[in-house]
Amino acid sequence: MSKIQVSHAVLDYVDNGKSFNAINDLDLFVEEGEFVSIIGSSGCGKSTILSVLSGIRPLTRGEFLIDGEAVDGPGKNRGIVFQHYSLFPWMTSRRNISFGIKQINNEIKPREVDEIAKQYLEKVGLHGFENKYPFQLSGGMQQRVAIARTLAMEPDILLMDEPFGAIDAKNKLVLQDVLLELLLNEKKKTIVFVTHDVDEAILLSDRVFFMYNKKIEEEITIPFDRPRVREDIFKTPEYLKLRERIMALFFRDVMENIGGNEVVI
Ligand code: ADP
Image (cartoon, rainbow, N blue to C red; front, side):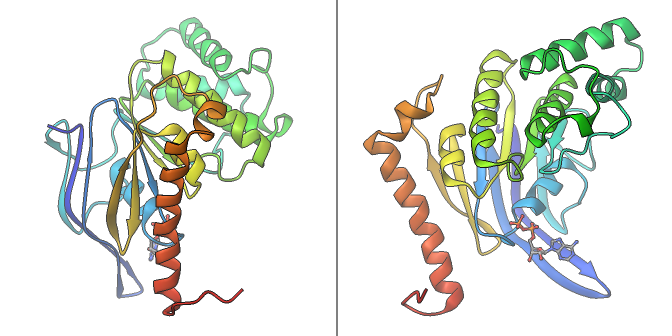
């Protein structure tokens, strides 16, 4: 039994009486402890799937199970990290994290909450920034706090919606490495990560799902052992082949959408 099972999923958005189909007959199976990325062009339905997995949006039709049980809303077993850091601006880093911990356990003593918050800030490399407010931190640091807050809530399943999409190129690499290292040391989590960055998907994932035409069209297994070191992986022939394969899927998508055989730049 897969940890996450989505079968024959259909989701229609209804807006002003009009219905728009965003995902159609989609199947998605994720094993316990697996890291999968969902990749695809803008508008193909990646974020819609995450909103279904988070429980925010019910499916129009189809089945969604976690650990074999039907899911009918949000739950403490799932944590979400969004592209925009979603921190409370009036709370320090530590208080943002403490707030998250208290949401899932309001019996835990304040001193203990504080200690856990500090530990998670250290894990994301923000020791010494406990009392800073979001406006005193860079975008990358704010995203580290957001990741720490979600991890401190100890969800089994981590849903990440382009978490590094708004971070500059250099800090994005740093954050990918922070995430890789964090996950090595954390209790095993099942992760669904949405991105449109091919290198990021290959570096982080066990499997990459390419989304097209409102469903998962291809599954690509990433064969690299962990721990993974970017510089070692990126120069291997396997990496170049995987990259080429995924880029070809994007290219086909572009060609079909412009309806021609030539791309004119
Ligand atoms: P992606 O994350 O891959 O960019 P989305 O899941 O955000 O794609 O969107 C899939 C499709 O559903 C898009 O065509 C988008 O315009 C449409 N869509 C997303 N949210 C809504 C909504 N609330 N109401 C109507 N259509 C929506």
